[in-house]
Figure 1: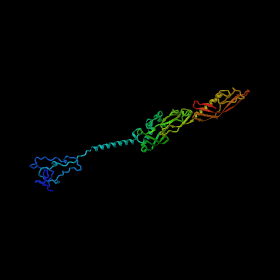
Figure 2: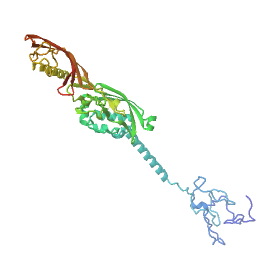
Figure 3: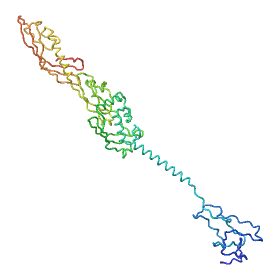
Figure 4: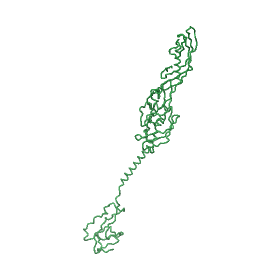
Length: 419
């Protein structure tokens, strides 16, 4: 050890003094103060290691102060002399201040909340949104729409459409139940749904769906769109025009849907069986089924009904011809009023004719014009006749005449016009 005896470097037990300290002594133990000039000496101010500041070196205790002549020594007998600067007796180094764990708990709680929210969103999504507004996927929405139709719930079915119909006269649950009674809706199958693909980002998707309406299979791809955050059909009802517009379409103006006159107005119906009829008793009407493929159309649908002359209509026109021929029997004239037949008056005395029952079996009633509601007829009619000649003789014979004309079926009974 370097000899500092000439300098007597200060502090208690100065180096080089007469009272040497045992090298084996523990310099951190409190020592009794010797008599003399040390009695009134104040202990040195606490070192920075006694303020328990957080340590930078990561160890549990601060390093001892660096001083001349200090060396770690094993514990031994208490040294003689005044106490050295340092911690009080029995002091053990304290660990650095513990960091608060509050931010950690806040972070964990926030993370848990996020997981709960994500789980709720997933449950709602997988469950189809839990409502009729088209939550979940586009395929879920289409299936929900068809299920509402299948159970006759018109109000719920309409909620799946972004555009609401101008009139709901034919969109009631009562009429819907008539439809499914004729053609039950079943076997709903979603074959594809791209609502989770690229199209979903712009709010449009396509759903390939197959469903049975009675014994008819509707296989179509529906275009759907996002409306206020939910997938919707463009319209849940089909906008229908009954036929070609115009005054010439006399038959089209007789069309009825579910017994209600339509005329040339636009109506709205659900897909499926449609009770298409006519108010005219002399014709029948049929139309192509209106199925699911018509739902995606933005513009109106033309059903183009087909009108056919009914047996009742043909019989009514024939009856009118029979009635006209009966007018001949009511007269003794050679050209009876209201009778389509007449005879050449040459050599015959007018007012002496006696007409018999006519035979119109050769007259055909086959050509029907639905645009004018006209039935054309043609053929030869025959009737027996007895008449006197201008010379006073009686002549018997059979009058025959080719008849042609039209029966106006817009009127009841039909009105005949002869050519």
